[in-house]
Amino acid sequence: MVKIISLYFLILFSNFCFANNDSLWCKNTSYFLRTNLHHGFIWSHSASAEHSSNALVLGLEFELLRKRNDTFDSHFNKKGFLTGFGINYFYFDNVIFGNNLNAFYTLESTFIKTKKLNVGIKANGGFNFVNNPYDKISNPLNRSFSSYINFYLGLGLVANYKINDANEISAKVMLNHFSNGGNKSPNLGVNFFTAALSYQINIAPNVSKPLDLKRRNGPFESKNNWQIAAYATYKNTPVSLDKYFWVNGIAVSYHHPFGLKKSHALVVGTEWINDQSIEYRMWYDKRDSLNYLRVGSLIGHEFLFHRFTWGQYFGVYLYKEVPYFNWIYHRHTIAYKINKNWSLGVSLFANNQNANFTDYRVIYRWNTKK
Image (cartoon, rainbow, N blue to C red; front, top):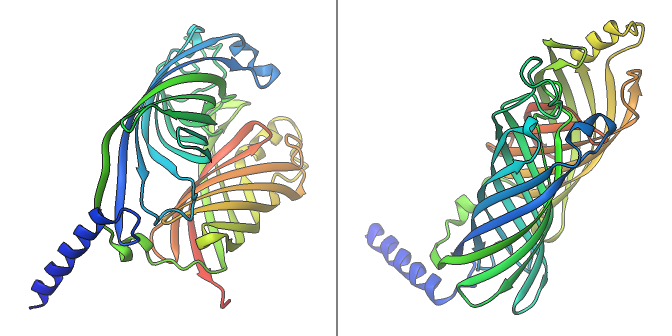
């Protein structure tokens, strides 16, 4: 009898999804395939990156995108957003960079919407694969990256014009970056601007299915909480490329969710950094009378995407004797929630435009009483 009743409600809600695409009880999604042609140039962001100046860039990109048509995700952006996966190939007319292939996850959030035109912010994040990194014998001029696998980031503006229900054209401007996050030197990174023209086709409109609310919401509560993170990584140093050292630290932070449906969080915290590559570098430079340990304070913002958290943080050192950095730094962190208390994450630590290291972390969270 219970199985019969369950089957009845499953059929009922399945039909309800097709009858009402705006229902909170169903998931209604459209899928798109987009082809992009890029053209741009490398931006030499520092004097030491002059080896990459004036290089032109050509690129070919494919994206598989999805758009939620129901109202369940409207608390992120009432004007809509696209998510998906993509791959792109970039050709640089500077031979030291070789061939470059990127695989990434993408998010487009609309802030201007009319009947025909949507304008939004676009962010890409993923991995970069190259075949000609730095080598002290075969490729000594490439100080931009020294790993075969690097991180890829992209940020820009995109405008989509709807021709009809199945076809769209778009244009976008992107700032692209890839580097290994500072864990292997030399690692100046590559920054390049591109403009792209795109054609987009709707390959699967209005795909509907019942929504598993329990799985969708997850076991998390949007309450004020404390988090403690232990992190570590392994990196070399510019003064001795063949030597690798441990970097580790502990961060404690307070998180205050806010906004509609608690999809954002304000964060304040502090962290202790033990970078043994800096200890070696200070010894090498005969500055080992100074303390290589650092203590920093952080304030930042997080996007709360269900099980994923994406955070951007501004830091100021409370204690620092290390002479190689100024007093200001920034972090960018992505974490995945395993359950209501534990998360795993990766975080990029940078001073100005230069990555210092990328760490991997375990995070424990507990809610406050309020």
